[in-house]
Length: 141
Length: 175
Image (tube, rainbow over all chains, first blue to last red; front, side, top):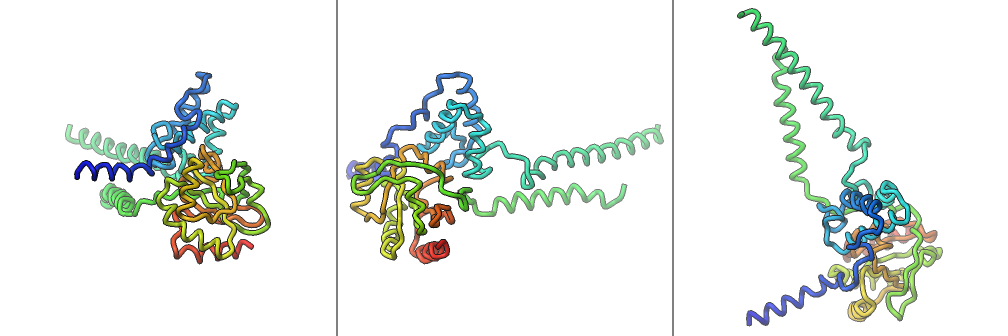
């Protein structure tokens, strides 16, 4: 009975695997022949976000679509595109969301500026504190 | 130093806390909208997915009449759920062209035999190449295209019963 149930459950899993029925794109799991270009493609793939499993880069993901994206990245770089051209090709279609290297703009600006402002504030506060302590040490000493 | 300056760290902490708590409580939004909405259809040529329907290319998507482009797959369960709605749209006189994502001819034919075939043309996109060109991140997705071949709307996920009227309205506006 248990065995039959397991078998029936396994049958249910087949449609979900069917998107893998097709062979992967040519460069999904294969490196480029030129090591310099492969290096470029590799570092770009680590900065591109997988559309299916959104907390992974396409270099990390096993999703079939991530494989298709890796193949596109490698093929475009092999054809002479620069990594930044490939990145902006994807940004034009999916928005900044697709890259793990956020551009500086009105939305992300505060993230870049906030640490600088906090550092200036901290130095200013620390200076005030040290000055006061020096003064009190002199008075007591 | 002024007395009230002592409160600054607490205020900063409260602000930080409010931002983090707000972010945690907001429901997660996983939907990635295509940036191609409002732009012309990208250039592509796809081979026919099954023998009974012709192949699909960009030129077929700019024939003077607004139409739907539906991306589907036989391995996609929500695609079964939206099949009746696509048939209803076809019955209402809407031209629907299809792109089969990562699929085999045999599986596509079985799927259409079982759940109905509302498509005029079906192209097969075995490497998700056209999906990437369209800024589409999954199946099913449906694009509304105006008569000049410009994408006017993207529907992400399966088309529910309530969505049919909205899509008809968008198609009407795209005239």
